[in-house]
Length: 261
View (cartoon, rainbow, N blue to C red):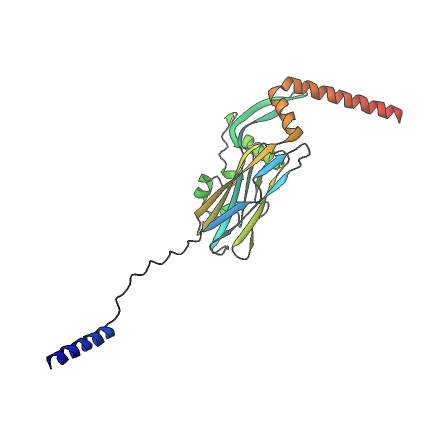
């Protein structure tokens, strides 16, 4: 009787144990979702080669944004700058019927190349103080002159650079495709100087710069153009004499051919 009671108790315990809830097992933590960067940009090429027949080139800047691009959402600004260089602006004066160099202004550090474009002009997208401090626009460049002062020399420098195609502002807007993709072409004239150029892509949201990406590309001389530039830099006297001799030979050859015809 006692053995039967013990056996019944064991069976009942086993049955109740089967009905108990299983012990919870620790689950591995879920992998965090990958964050989408608000701005991704790239260049079509990172090297521009200047040869003897170089007539200019275009750099394509393209990318995408996390949000839709539009006037009420994200907007994009693209700024390209070249190596800084000194510039001298001289005023011509007439003395006794002859034109001579008059007062001059030296600008010690001006960008050799500057281009800016956006989905809208920068002055429509950003507060004036942000635009000026960020040098976003030709009128925001810090052009400080040594020597003769006055806005006329600054205006003359602007006209010279714009006329040469070296300073460009809003000639073509940043184009948008599919709501989030953007692209713009930065034109480089034939007169660009060798060096490292920087492209800065800015993401503007609610009149604030919320993201930026910096990209670089190189402009280099190659072939005969590089050798000629080296001679002009290292031996300017030899370079000048060679140019005079070649010009004289070309004139002499032209006169001979003209007489024969």
